[in-house]
Image (tube, rainbow, N blue to C red):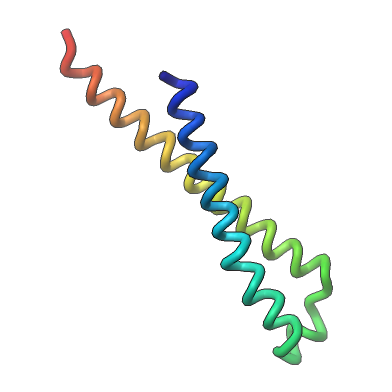
Length: 82
């Protein structure tokens, strides 16, 4: 049961990381080419750091919430049994 809970968390976290990467990369790349301050201060490394940080944060937040939700669901289901 624990493996199933963690697997659900990994899958949900990976999906969230992909969506966060897309949602962060588009505005970051666009602003680095159009906004004068960003053009002067955000090199390729900074842009990659912004995108990867958001993807990592999304992964861990969603995976943690999914695992906790699954654990709560399983603990309530098993509490009714004698």
